[in-house]
Length: 467
Ligand SMILES: [Cu+2]
Image (tube, rainbow, N blue to C red; front, side, top):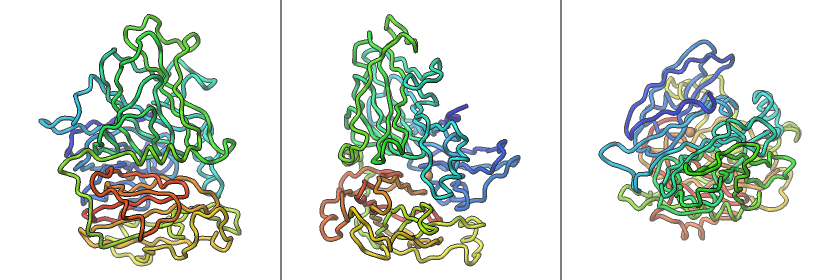
C-alpha cells in the first residue's frame, strides 16, 4: 500500500499504534505534527528519542493528540525510508464542535510524493557520502505520477465532484528534496488550515508546499462539467534544472455529469499553469500571505526571554569533497545511543549543552561570494537548554554557503508562530518592528527563504529533548 494507511481521529484522542517491522532494515515511525505533550518516548526520530525497531521486532507507539486539528502525517524517521513509508493523520473536530467553515460535501486526501526508480537506500548513500542526491524520477499524487510520464496510467488518481459542491482537500508534501507547487486547472483553492491549525481563508491559483507541510484547501466545483481538469504538482527550486527533477505529476478532476469519462489515451484534460520553477518571490508572497484564523486561542509570545539566532548552511567537509549541512556551523553526528535516553539516564558525553545561541562568525550570510575559510563546519551534538514555560524566539538565517536555497525547517513537540520573514541578513534592530504578533500562522514546518530569514516564536511548555 503506497502511500500507507490513514489514521483517523478526533481532537484530543489518544491512539495506540503497534508497529511490526517486517522489512529487512531498521526503522522508526514519527508522528509529524503530533506534539506528544510530556510523552517524547513515542515521538520517533531514530537516535533522538529511541533506538530503531529492528527487523522482526515491534514497538507500540502512543500518540497523544492535544491541540492538533486538521491534517498531519506519519512517516519513517530512519534515513530515507520516509520516501516510501508514510501516510496521513486526519484529526477531526471533537463533537459537538465543527469546522470553522461550512461543512464540505466531501473530503479527499492528496499526498504529494517523490519517486526514485533506484532503491532510496542507494540515493541516501550518495547523500551520506556528501554528494547531492540524484534527482528523483517522478513526482507523485497519491502514489501515481500521472499522464506526463511514460509509464502506467490506468491507476492515475481521479477525483469525481458534483457541480456546485465544495470539497476539502487535505494536501501533504511527503517529498524528500524540494517544495512543490500544486494547482488545479480552472479552479481556485481556498486555504483554511495548515499543519493542523486553522488559517484565515485565503484564495489562490496555486499553493506552494514544502516537505513536511500540510495544507487544507477548499475546492469549489464551479466550472464547466464538460471538461476534464488536471490537478498537478511541479517543483520549486533555484537549482539548475539538470540537478533536480523538473517534471510534473498529474491527477484528474472530473465532474460526475461529464459525458466523456477520463481515459489516459484519448482525454486531454486542461493543464494548470505555475510560476517559474525558481520564482522566489512567488514563494515568499504565498507564505507571507498566510494568517491564523482569528480566534481567542491565538497567543503569540511577547515576553521573549530566549533569543536564538541560527544560520542554516550547506558546508563542505573532508577537504571539500563532501557536502554537509550545519546549524550555527555545527554538523550533527548520530550518537550510538538515543539522546532522550542519555538525558534520562544521565549518560555523559552523548551530547553537550552548548549549542551557540548565535552564529560563531558573523559575515554577510547572503553575499554572492563566501570566504573559503568558513566552508568547513565542526561536528557535534549540542543542545539548547530552555527553561520550562519560557518564551522563545528563533530566527533562522539562510546562507549562501555552497548553494543558496530555501530550506524547510521543522520543530518536534510544538507548533510555533511564524512572526516574520525577509530577504538578506536579519537585522535585530529593524526587522522585529515589522513582525506580525496579531495573527501569524501557527505551523510546525516553515521554509527559510532563499538568502533570507524567518522568525518563529513558541512557549517552551513541552519538556523533552526535541529535534
Ligand atoms: Cu515532526
